[in-house]
Image (cartoon, rainbow, N blue to C red; front, side, top):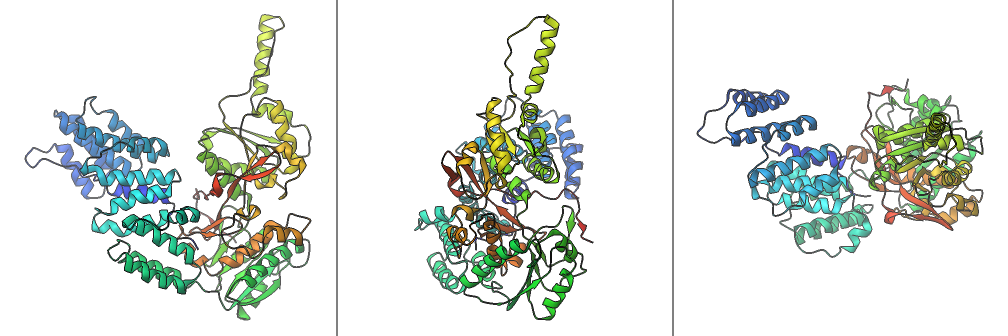
Length: 628
C-alpha cells in the first residue's frame, strides 16, 4: 500500500501552508506615527476580519505620502488578499506599486506574483519566477514552500518534497509536523521505480526521507517486517525530523487495522441478465482471495439486478456473521441499499450512486464509471499543456455525462465547442464540420461570393483556436470518426478518448485509430504494481470472448481494498496500486482511480509517460442529497 497522508489534494494543502506563513502583519518601524487606516487595519486583522483589514491596508497605502510606507502597506494588503484567495484584489495592489523598487522589494513582489500564479492555476509561471537565486534569507522559507507547491502542481513530487524538506530545517516548531506530513504525502506520489533507482540514498536528511518512503512502499503489505525495518531506519537516522513523531505514527497507521475481517459477504446478481458480469467479478475476487495469505470466510448472496432483494440480503449477511460486505453491482441495487437509515457493517459497493446522492456512514463506492476516465483524460490534457479543447460526444445520457465530467475537470471556460453525433450513422461529416467551424467558413465564402457576384476559389479553413479534441466513442464509431477528422484537415490535432474506444485487444481495424490517445486501467497493459494474482494473458484465455477482463480486475481490486478502505478514507492522500488504477478513497467514501494514458499505434497500443497516472475527482459543487 502506498503512503498515507492527512493532506489532499497536495497542491491545495501546500498552498494553504504557503499562505499561512506569509506574514500578513506588516513590519512597522519602532518610532513612527501610524496612519489611522493602518491602525484600523491592524485592529481588524487582530479580530480576524481579514477582508476589512486588507481593504484598510490598501486605504492606508493610498493616503500615505511616504513611498516606502506605501509599498510596505500594499504588500500587507496583497498578502491578505492572497490568503483569502482573492487574486484580483491582490493583483490590483501590486499594480499600484511604484516602477522603481529596492532590491528587497523586488524579491517580495516576485514572491507575491508567484503566489498569484499558483492561485490562478498557472504553476509553470509561478515556478519560472521562483527559479531566481540566491534568495534573501528573510524570504527563503516562504520561497521554498511556494516552490514546493508549484512543483507539486506540475506533477514533480520528488522535487517538491526536496524543497519542503529543505524548508523543514529552519521551520518554526508549530509548523514542523504538518510540514513533515506534507513531505510524506509528496513522496507517496513518487513512482516506486524512481524510488528504487535512488537507493541507497545519500546519508543526509533528504536521503532519510527517501529511504523511509522506499521501505514503507516495499513492505506496506507486510506489517511485521515493516516494524523491524523501521527500527533499523531509526537507528540510522536518530536525528531525522521524522524520527521523533511522524515515523512512529506511520508505523501505527500501517500496522493497526490492516487485517481482513473474519467473514465477507458478496452481494451479486448471480442469475439473470447480469450473471455473466457477476461471474467475472467473482472470478477476480476469488483469484485475489487465493493469492492472499489471509483467507476469511466468503458467502455469496444472489441479489438479482433490480435491487428488490438487496436490503434483505444485507440483513441476512449481517445476521449470519459478515463483518464486511462487497456489492451490490447495479445502481438500482446500490440506491436501494444506500436508502437504509444505517449500515452496521461496512459496504464496498461495486458501482457509484447517481450524482448528487450520498449514502449512510460505512458505505464505500467502487466502480468503473466513465466519469473516472473523463477526469483522467482532462488531467492528462493539462499535463500536456493543452489550453483549449473541443468535444465530440454521442447523443444520449452517456455522452452528456462523459462530456460534462471532462469539461468540469478541464475547465468549462476552456472548452470552445461541443457537438453531439448520432452513433447509429456512418457519416459524421456534419458534426465534424460544426466541431471544426468548417461550416462557418463555408457560410463566409457563400456570403462573400454573393456580395462580389462572382465565383471564387475556396478551401475551407478549420478553426485554429483549439489544440485537442476530446472524443467519446465506442470502437465502431471511433474507427469511422478518426479517418473523417483527417479528411477535414484535422490530422495534426491530438484526439483524446476514454477506454470505451478500445475493445481490450488490438486488431487490424484499430489502424484507423492510429495516434488516438485514451485512458485505461493499468492492468490491461501489465503495469499493475499490485502483484495481480493472474496475468492479463491468463484471464484472456479464461474469457476468450473479451470484454470481461475489466470486470475481473474490478473484483480483484475489491478484495484488495477490503482491509484498507477505512484508513484510506481517513487519509485521502493514501493510495493503493491496483489493476483498475492507482486507487485512493475520498472523504465521501468514493474510490478514485488514476489511469494510464495509452496511444493507438500502427501495429498495437503503447502506454505513454512511463506509466504515469492521471485523474482526480473534482470537488462537489453542491451539497449531496440522501439516496432515499
